Every structure is written in structure tokens, then in C-alpha cells.
Image (cartoon, rainbow, N blue to C red):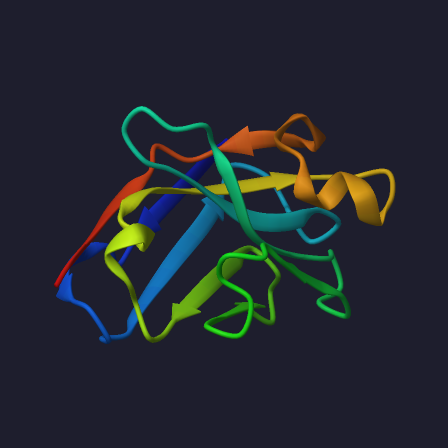
Length: 125
């Protein structure tokens, strides 16, 4: 089972970036998928998640209104479109998949069973 992120990079503040994640090794069509991030010396932070059928989306307060999460038709891919990037968005972004018990659990790391290796996003001013 593998989650592979792509799309990270070095961008200027105000720019946009699209992260993608491809899941393989099993079907994730029944799994929620999401993104967390972690900056050096900081705790892991919830960014966004999407339900297994794509009908519900969840966003962290620090990115709400600036990012959009979506998943592919086969439901084994997930993307994160980020706009108006700020230096404080700099972090390693991790793709994840799991089956949260309720809406509350979408925001918590332990609800997710599978994690990617991460992709670095660096925003300079």
C-alpha cells in the first residue's frame, strides 16, 4: 500500500500550487482521504479532507478559503489546490487515507491509517 504525493515546490507568496496524491496497492474508494502538514519544530496540522464519496469536505481554519480538496473519479487520487500561498504555509505536506468514525475525526491524525512520505512546500516572501 502506497500513497505518493507530488506537486510540491518553491513558490513566491501569493502564488498557487496544486498537490496530488496517488494511492496504490489496494482500493481506497471506501476511504476518506486528506492532507496534513508539518513545519519544522511544529506539530502536525490538519489541512483538508474529503469523504469517501466526495460529498463532504473539511478544511483547517488556517487554510479555509484558500484551498480546495478534490478526488478523482476512481477515488484513488486526491488533489489539493492551494491559492494565495503565504510563507506560513511552508511545510511538508502529507497525503493520508482512513475511515474516520464521524465528522470530528476527520480533523485528527489517528483517524487515518495510511500516510505518504510527504512533499515539501516552501513559500518565500
